[in-house]
Amino acid sequence: MTDECIQARFRLPYPEFTLEVDLELPGRGITALFGHSGSGKTTLLRCIAGLEQAPAGRLVVQGERWQDETTFLPTHRRPLGYVFQEGSLFPHLTARGNVEFGMKRAAEALEPAALAHVIDLLGIGPLLGRWPDQLSGGERQRVAIARALALKPRLLLMDEPLSALDLKRKREILPYLERLHDELSIPILYVTHSPDEVARLADHLVLMEGGRALASGPLTETLARLDLPIHQEEDAGVVLDATVAELDAAWHLARAEFPGGSLWVRDLDFTVGRRIRLRVLARDVSLALERHDGVSIANLIPATVAELSADAHPAVRLVRVDVGGTPLLARLTARSADALGLVPGKAVWVQVKSVAVLE
Amino acid sequence: MSGADWLALTTTLKLSAVTTAVLLLLGTPLAWWLARTRRRAAVAVEAVVALPLVLPPTVLGFYMLVALGPHGPIGATLQAMGLHHLAFTFTGLVVASTLYSLPFMVQPLKDAFAAVGPRMLDAAATLRAGPWDCFFHVVLPLARRGFLTAITLTFAHTVGEFGVVLMVGGNIPGETRVLSIAIYDHAEAMDYASAHLLAGGLLAASFLMLFTVYFLNRRYHVVHV
Image (tube, rainbow over all chains, first blue to last red; front, side, top):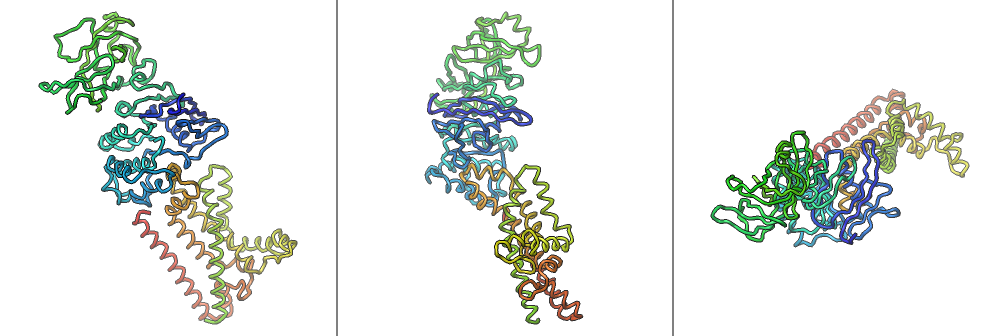
């Protein structure tokens, strides 16, 4: 354990389930607490905030004890920021009043210049004089995020901040969250049940089910694990952090390099050296025993089969291949897997039909 | 209006003001507890608080008279401590009125506190507000319509009480003789002119008070609270 990390151990019985976790989370980046409703992810977040009191819990945040056998720091003394699902702005205060509410009370709040930057980052400058009931759902959430950041928190907790918004509003806020991730060094615990939000935002993934953490690890590694129940749906796939290594101006393509290989993606006005995030869905990946040049697919990479597993339907197999240390997932029919004689260790060619750039 | 009637008016106003102040102090924590607690016992407490709404005032007044009088548990204790018992005293009236008007303070406050919702309290806590800070700067402003309603109803209801006063306080000028008793006296004595004056005044004042509350509540609603 290092001083940088967050250690959380809680046991809290409820009529429907018992929260029982013992986690060590990274002290930087976005950690997604992912799971279905009722999996205990919000309860875990509330325990970390001190809004729920788990009797024999233990919580150490970057070397500071917030809770153990003898200590229980009340919520208002914890240097955290919390963004609720929706409707948490005080209706008797303007947007500005809401943002300043915590700042006035925090031992250490943002300096005016830093606050101006956050307000700018979230694009809420023109909204500050309005009352919460004059703001749209997306605007309210952005104000709520600014209100939490204004406290200069050591840990930011976000409880499905987008779940109450429609797709359009979600698309409006996601870029702001991505900017937060890129620009702020605060560790963020982000509760969500949306695979898309995980893919776009998370660095670390905690998979929750029935009050327990089934897995906790770096995003790419964890998403590629076949023993976890996260691949039953259409979203099965991996997320890769890559660097733009080369631009093909003639064809508007960019080569994104990741440890062990690279993929050609659409050039969205990239510059060489830019960090981008790629999402490769298992259904867009096929495997071949030999290199086929006469196909339309641009991305052909040599790899080794690492693991096979059953999928939701008996006709389908998920295959994890290893590309020089980086995992990719492929979804094939069981018949194809059998015909190709896929077994762990076998060399294959990976054909990637489509790659999504998440920026 | 005679001097005795003026005295009855000031006694009434004093009784109502003191009762409202006492109830504000006692009723606020009680309403808060009722709005927040998950204990089953709260249901019984709620029923007890609502009792004065359904009991004949004479029943309440009778029990209060017995309890506060020289042989009752409260009166006897006070006497044992060298103090006076509370039957037929202004203090006795305040105690009885406090019980009698309890639901008019507690129920609107309880509803207002419940309407504030746990999300607001959680948000305040994550914004570094301790429990008292949260109460004064989040709950109070959000519940101010409830406070306005509770204070007005309690005051108006105390102004209008009759049965309890008659039982506990009797009819001592300057001490326990309130407006409603004065009206009763005038009617008994066939002095309808004086009865009309006081009754009409009380009617108009009560209407004005309630009108003001409903007017303000409507206006506050428009300005975001």
